Length: 225
Image (cartoon, rainbow, N blue to C red; front, top):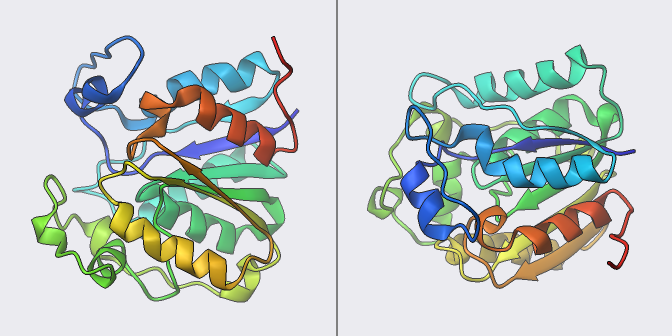
């Protein structure tokens, strides 16, 4: 049995999700998805006997990156989780990087799903700008506090960890994730790299393909039906 902690990025609205999903439409009281972007993934993982946690983080307009990292750290420590497959989507890559740097002894593998892959001292907006994109020009991307806060960590702490990157080739952020691909290509040590012909939200439009990669990340493979 593996233990997964799945971290969402910016709080996606249900309209965006419903436009992308191949599943049933979702309706929520506040019109936001939060951790529910992982509902299908969590269900499939639990069908295979794994533990899976997918918290909804505090609102990005009233929270900070440090605060989001703290929320996930507390989940891991309060549930005494070990050998965690820690999965971050989009901005969630900033959070999972910070959590893993603080709790490396608890992490079995880091998985980045079309996610930010920061260097120490970078913010999410720094990464986007470094790809030649003005963050202000990205529809729906506001300078909320977590997105402009830099993350500082010791890269040496993360280097020994096994890591997986899933790049989505139909993503709106393909120019940004090209930078992640280049960083991984320059140092493949402990990296596994995948590409999916998916949108930025593969749990919506390629859920089974994403699920199979997540199983592999824990050293498992789905049995043929």
